[in-house]
Each structure stands twice: as structure tokens, then as C-alpha cells.
Length: 132
Image (cartoon, rainbow, N blue to C red; front, side):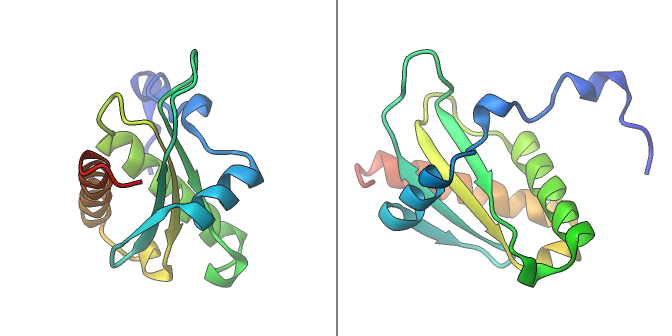
């Protein structure tokens, strides 16, 4: 693996876009909707935008059943990078939780990126229809 260099350092996945609190994860699981893909399941819930905060928050849950710490951390890195590169339409206020499947480890990154884009499009369509 090559060194990412100085240009990619400023394009990190910002902490303001991360879902961090357990209560927020629980709320998304209990009240939100789901989108299924071959390498992940995406849970999402519309929320009211708070002044001074980012509109989109994304969290990742990778349980111990999916592998040892090295494998789980690799899954989270791949997911964060796919989210960062895929992006999300500005102005969408949502909490999103992404649960990977074990197949994510061996999936081609372009396939993973495509699944992430389709998941984000499904979330946006759902919000446009006026559903949660």
C-alpha cells in the first residue's frame, strides 16, 4: 500500500459526519428503514437538522462475529473510504448506520463504491417520497 500523501490528508471523513452515540444508533435501528445490498445493510432515519451541525451523520457497526480486530478495522476503513468518495447530496438530514457482511472483505472496492452509491440513492428517494 502506498503512502496517501498530503492531498488526501485534508479529505478525511470528518468527525462531524460520524454517528457516535449509542442512543443514536439505537434510534436508527428501532425507528428507521433499511436498504439491503449484497455486501452491507444500510439503516437510515430522517432527522431534523440542528443549527450549526452537519446534516448527515454516518455510523458503522462491525460485530465480533465478522472477524478478528484486524478484519473488522479493515472493513471500517473500506466503508469510510467508500462513503467519503461516494458522498451524499448536501441538504439531506439523516442518520445512517451501515452494517457490513463478511463478503465486504473480499469485494472489489469499485463494487463496494457502487453499492454505497445505490444505497445513498435509495435513501434520498425514500426521503423525496415523504417517508421517514
